[in-house]
Length: 385
Image (cartoon, rainbow, N blue to C red):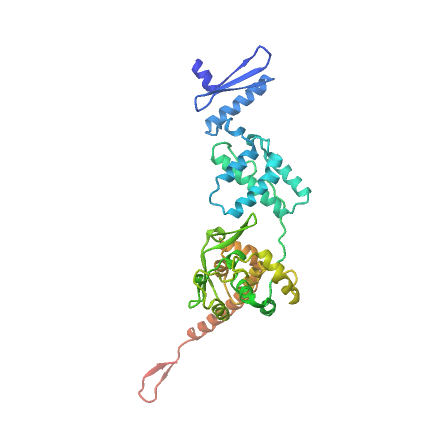
């Protein structure tokens, strides 16, 4: 009877008038908690027994770690992330997550608390997109706590998020892109590469001569530069996706002339000192002034990636082709950004369906006519007409 009582839990009144609820966990260790009222002790113990029967019991010692401490432990375990992402996540954990949740145990976080915190971030003036990004990091850390057996559910999952407004994107025409390239002088091949291949800045400046397959008109994207704490670091492309990017014939000639006489390991677009070309220096010394002279103020080197997508779609590229060219993780990402550029395809499909139906009707009329046999005046035979 004593064994059964311990397995199911027990409640006893202490000399000071409080109530002690005891139970034995699946690990066979006894645990207890004290309450002022017996009903509270009974309610708590009943909840423990239900969680044990469902296999959802969590060792309370594991869930006493604070959110701030756990977020840093989670980030330290994310070896798959790129250095730039690690740095960005770490900054958000320090500035937003640890500052708000640093002393709160992960077991004490509720969906209502998370929702209230997000609302405070919005009220502080942060953009909706930034708030969603901060929430994502907290949610990933707490999901990892569920995986680690410290929580039964993720309290940040399913919390209403502020609606992010997409920033309008600027797409240059062929003429505008040519004007910008001319104004950039010796960096014209770089501008055309960004505007016609969709390379990210970090991918373009990390290109080596051996990455150019000019006979096949392809660029092999295998590396990318990222700035980490002010230093240029060479790593893999975004999402670790290596890919081949097509090069228009006119750009093949420009690149061939640019790299003539260079060694395979040389950079295609080096800085004046022969090192990695940094975005900030390039914009300050070349690009921004050139864009202003071309009447294209506000455009950025990264914005040329959108131009590449737009021009490719105008040339008839499908969603899948554009997705591969840009190195998106899926065609859905491409559609989320550029779906409106494919709008003309609706008219094209409607026109082709109309033409196909008209052709089918004409074929049916030709084959469904009654056949009339007439006598051949030369051999007396009959021929179908």
